[in-house]
Image (tube, rainbow, N blue to C red; front, top):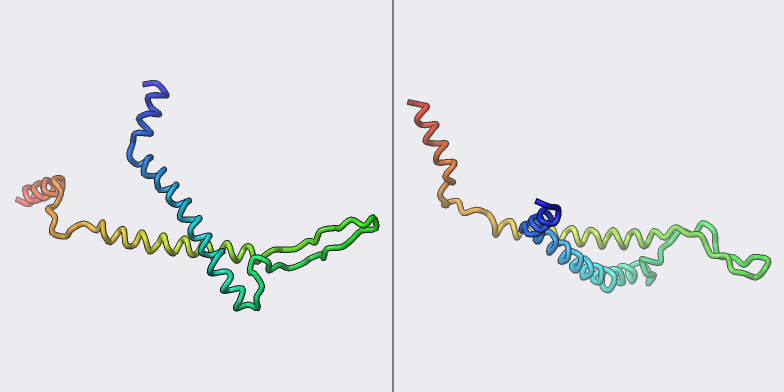
Length: 132
């Protein structure tokens, strides 16, 4: 089988397609949560912290200055507010995915009254035959 045939077989597997769908849906979901954090959560946190946007929080190491030629020299700052905002974004995405998977696994839980698999029945017969 040539490389193209192997590639077609690889793509035709259900798990690869499921993974691709999961990645696309996950990316779209990440955008939704980012919009939630940027548009609702962080403005509320900013208001509680005195009206300053969290993404603007920074530690200025060297303030903006003007050199001898009159050109502006940009400030050097550690923008830790962006990190905090991104961490909150990540935690919300992780929490929602956790809740979703927990509900999904609860729905997929196998029925306790289902008959055992054929392999289990055969192994039980072998075990019982060996006991005699």
